[in-house]
Amino acid sequence: MFEKPFHSRPLNTLTILVTGGAGFIGSNIVEYLLKFNTGRVKVLDNLSNGFYKNIEPFISHPSLEFIEGDIRNSEDCREACRDCDFVLHQAALGSVPRSIKDPVTTNSVNIGGFLNMLVAARDNKVKRFVYAASSSTYGDSKQLPKVEGTIGKPLSPYALTKYVNELYAEIFEKTYGLECIGLRYFNVFGPRQDPKGAYAAVIPLFIDAVLENRPPSINGDGEQTRDFTFVENVVEANIKAALSLGFKSEEKVYNVAYGEKTSLNQLLEVLKTKVGVDFDPVHKPERAGDVRDSLADISKARQDFEYNPGIDIREGLEITLEWFRKNKTFITRRD
Image 1 (tube, one colour):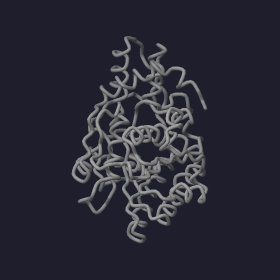
Image 2 (cartoon, one colour; image 1 turned 180 degrees about the horizontal axis):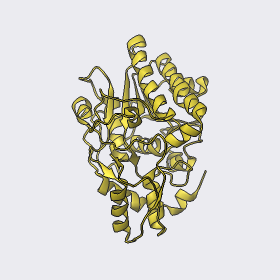
Image 3 (cartoon, helix red, strand yellow; image 1 turned 45 degrees about the vertical axis):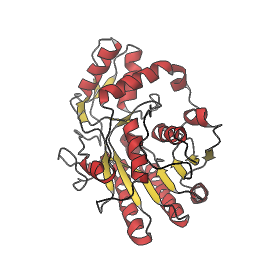
Image 4 (cartoon, helix red, strand yellow; image 1 turned 90 degrees about the vertical axis):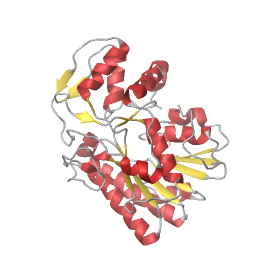
């Protein structure tokens, strides 16, 4: 991955903090930053959602500093932000079902922790704060494709927390001058995504199943659609959003996706064909809080920071399948 850089300016003089840097998306961002010689890469993670194994290959790199800490602890946030030029905030408690089961913890991490990070970034005079927003913010809006300026009502506590993040970010920019960029991720997948957790995403669950030649479960009829987005495209968005010189749009929230929709049934058929297996999925009841259809309009990100996702779902699945095949031991470790 990362055969070509997404930046044009040198990174060797910069200090960049990646919160949640031991997680799936965060560790891919860390890999990119180290590969292209960032001066100093700081990682803040409490290892509750992410895993040390995700950054273990980089831990001896002279530019990496790992801080085991929690965004719910304001002092951890202040220390992590010290001397940083940019913050790429990925730390959060994801999953709609988990938020429905435990809304209090979701709120504490995603809103309380987010606010702690904003304050720490402000106080340390960080140049730009780029944060992981979510397509779940579109809620019950039926409009397709999803356009940043039109959202519906949240369908889950998780979606609500991510919307509140956007409101807080806007307030901090207007009130304190902290430049904040929100990236609404659409169904990210790729290497290092955990298939073993209680709230694992659909693609790693499907891949794990087809590689073991067993039928996966689908909630509902499988005709629900998603704009599946390969993680390298998400890394591109983070790097370009952080380093872009200026933005044409006043509202700095952007869809980060590929711009194509795929049903879960189509997804499974592609995986079955690639692996050479054949079975029918096990259908279960629809989940509360799930959105029926999702498709992003990514023209705003293209305009403001030249986001140009280069890997579609089929190529992304090839890369991800190959990674899962080579790292079977890696993905079964829980450290």
